[in-house]
Length: 431
Image (cartoon, rainbow, N blue to C red; front, side, top):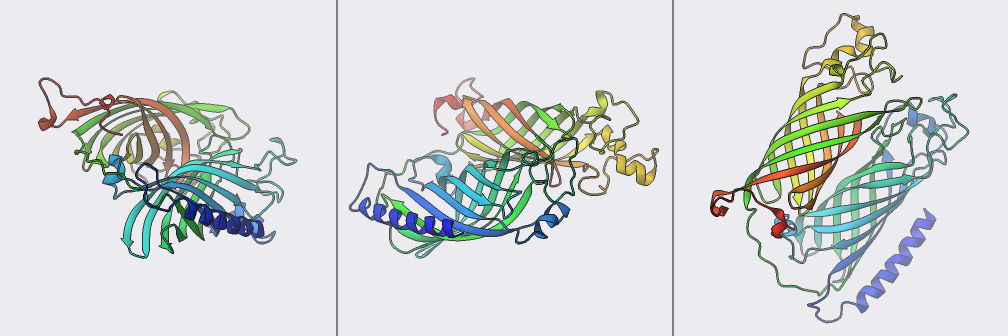
């Protein structure tokens, strides 16, 4: 923490000096931007034996520093205006996990600060971020091999299964302006790191944190004439997506193919938010007796039909120009694998059959009858997009997948000209 504090002071002094030199007078041709430096500390939410063994070795809390390069809205893009002039930022978090076996990490991510309250000497925003985190240690970096791996061993990092992990962050951000160029900054939030079963083990970690730092704004007087934008020209849209990936069921076994097909109809309730319903078909090759994961019974052969699930979902879209955030919640309508869970057969016998909607015996034992999908979609040309999503049961990830899709936006009646009914993004309206 001494290194973090020293670095914080140096950056704050440097940023304040440079900021004062760059904000004299009025600027109409420059871009306003800010630099944030914020030391933080936190505590882990996970209460299980993977964390207990590290707590027994001494203090086990995450500490670190958040760095950010932020671009406040200058009212030049529609999505920022529709979200109350949201600030876009690129962040980096340097985290010490509190134990040399678990190691440290560097995470890089884009983030948004969505304003909730702005008064003269106080600004409150909601922060959302997603990116990638690189950890310095994982279970295979010590004197451990797959042949003698022991979850309970004191010298084994059971938190991370591989170096590269997903980083998710959400919280509340507060700015208290001191001058036009400098503000005190505070943040209270939550972050999650795991690999989505791309590697095993995949315990991952969840933590809450709090930090206090400073923000220096450059070209604070810069102004540009606001650009006026019309409402979104389409109401309903149809999304068609195919995706695939690899699922690591256990460290001893190979990765299994996973795939999905999604089609959904979404209504644009506002210019930045859409809601609708979708139909999903999933294939998971890890529904197999040879996975060694002990989730499914080992005394039968699984057919292709056993590895397929079909569900219907409530779709939510949060639109930020070229990028769309996805939060879906669905229930399975076809789910034969629900009858093959090992723990249920031990508890109730091999003749036991789950109803379509059933109560799970808990995380790590059975997957729920419903699912969540969290993801990002980015347009690459016209209505064509790339998509990355994580599918979970409750808070336990099943897999991560990557896909390609096409959006069919149907123009509103007052936007149609002649026989034209489909909107094309390549016309440059929506940035």
